[in-house]
Figure 1 (cartoon, rainbow, N blue to C red):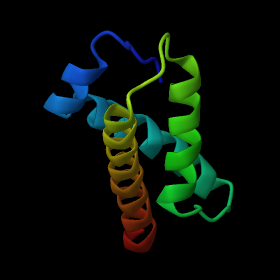
Figure 2 (cartoon, rainbow, N blue to C red):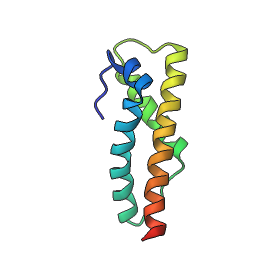
Figure 3 (spheres, rainbow, N blue to C red):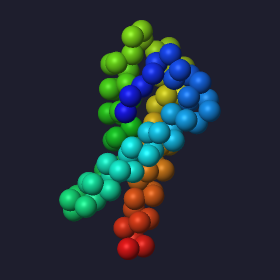
Length: 91
């Protein structure tokens, strides 16, 4: 996922960041499920995604921004996982 660090605060506030991430995760989780693998817990993906985003930041995120970002990532991971697992049990 491409992250525009200049607009990240606004995208987090509007929910756009979470929505875009969730959409990408749904596709990835579907592929993982199609390969017969179990999806790890959302916190596993959230921490890895947060690390990548933090590493790419042009300046270190504040403690508060890092916390808020992780919460948005975790929520996107939870929503995507729930959607994919719901599809598997319905199908």
